[in-house]
Image 1 (cartoon, rainbow, N blue to C red):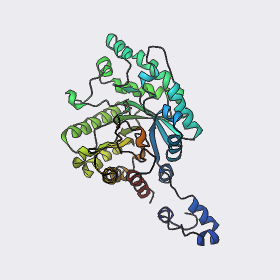
Image 2 (cartoon, helix red, strand yellow):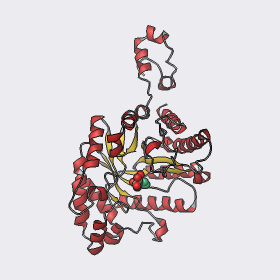
Image 3 (cartoon, protein in one colour):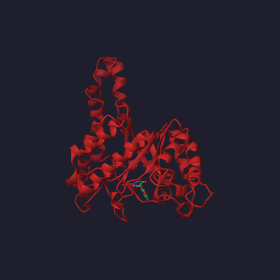
Image 4 (cartoon, helix red, strand yellow):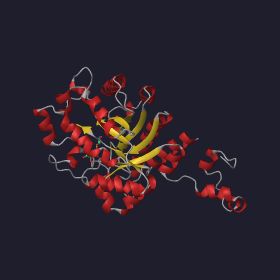
Length: 366
Ligand code: XIL
């Protein structure tokens, strides 16, 4: 750094000797004030992005939520507002209200919006699935892509083009999920979706986004193999795939199967294909919500730390987004039961998961 202090000293707070430095060295005092505190400040110092999934309705209703997102995030992902079924529940009746309000929030707070997700078997509207089953007309998909992708060109430079295309349990040799898209167009639907998304957003980085890859047991091994196979074949066919999203839905019931080497090897292989990697939906599902809170939080923090240690050690990993910033709105909650699996708890207090993110990001800076 310009004044001779290392970045590590800067981050560890070694400069924060109150009074002394402030009086003697105004420049250093300014640095002390600028010490990164929030997750996005830490991520920014590491040339990375930190973000979260968001709900438009909560943004509108909850100012504490809005403030937390504005402070902590550099990137926001609509949790469902870009799903086809939300945008076009009936054929030809497009409603961008939710996605537009998230885009407006992102613009007003100088963030970017990650586009999640274009083709997903769970987000296709019934009318779309029925139409594709009747007649495999790519024009139906293209019309949807053409209506949504260019609309967010100003605020969005990354898209999940295909979400959860892999399902080895469906028994195909290529490990692809049997979905309305696959049935209508065959495996080539994936390449076509990337080509079209690229046509509508030529400057954007386009991602395949997948789950169930974080643990070391046969089903997830099969998923990892299928993902690598698919990414390689997309690259081989010249498809404009630029990145891979590893969702990172951690699960304390599976934690004994966490294997650092297996995860590191997988990320290495994805990176070796020349792809950017996003940790796209990080959260931790608890296994026992009856223990004391300190114990629950320690287990969640530990799982997050072990995962992040490996993920952030890989230079292809350029961003981390959690699937929500606060437990108040986690998709893992059940009626009357909060899952404590996000960086901020339901009262917006930082948890050990928050600390794990900070230290993993700090290591990436140092
Ligand atoms: C989830 C949302 O969080 C839920 O609120 C919704 O009911 C279903 O979808 N993988 C994904 C996300 O890619 O889109 C999913 O989000 C979680 C799993």
